Length: 162
Image 1: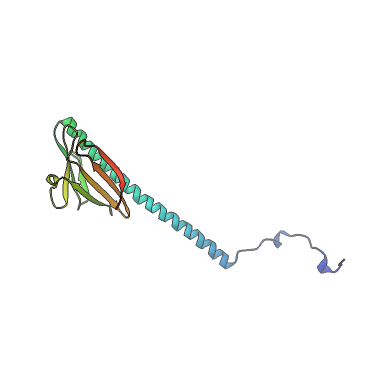
Image 2: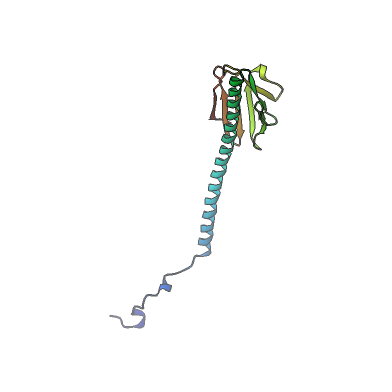
């Protein structure tokens, strides 16, 4: 049995267990936090782009359905005017709606409904039918297709490919 001072257990002190982070450990922790925040921001920004396109698409769908309803109620043809270059559309007796900045619009409509190089319309008739067409909204890598059935005038929106 050892009786020398170095052999005698000394009492436990809390300070013996506490130690600080080294500089390398602190830098690694900060880097991991930065990577986590960056990944979250990237995911949120992609989601926001999708939400902006979807919201603009829903507004466009509402304007198309309004135009169809107006044609049925008024018992005369009504048209939604679209300008692809200006990124605007206008329903009958409503103001011009501008799409959000950075959003692109593409229009596919009947040849007789093209009113210019970059403009056209989708017309609805009193029986609910229409000239039909497709409007694509694109921003970044996301896209939404707004489709108008010519026979029934039904307006649908679905996620599309840019």
